[in-house]
Image (cartoon, rainbow, N blue to C red; front, side, top):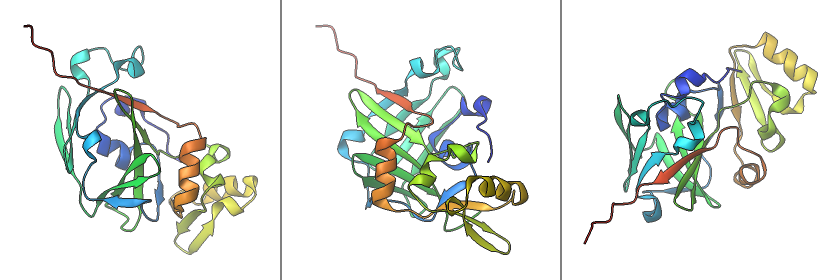
Length: 212
């Protein structure tokens, strides 16, 4: 498993988190019901919650990520960059339970998806990127979904192996594509019952009131 690069993480955009950061684990499909646009209650302006990064990464409030969600796009602005990510056949928004899942088709491995999910909360949003784990023994998602390793000579359902055999498999198959076989009900149970590795908070930006 690849380790999370926290120096890079500070300079993230949402799509880079979903696609690049922390894992070689993918999903065989996106979950839930596909949506053609972001729901009206998500279409707002947000800023990264400074408290999440306080004392860790952020030294200058001007570098905080700003986020605008409109009908079919996410616009991200920080001190150095501005990007726009538009929903398409390779960037899918879907709803599963009370979560809005953003799934990105991996450019190098067609048919495999990377996933992150939003939840609407008071005064903003939370966002959880699924980034995989550093240790096989910490793979809580494998308790819910079949975890399959695809390699040159075949594929193996990893979580059907004893833990020691799973560890040994990774030692000898470092370049495999690892993916979970999606099951909507079980993935929802995972989201609702397991503590996220990383929980990112975005605060809604409210218009300033004019003085009368």
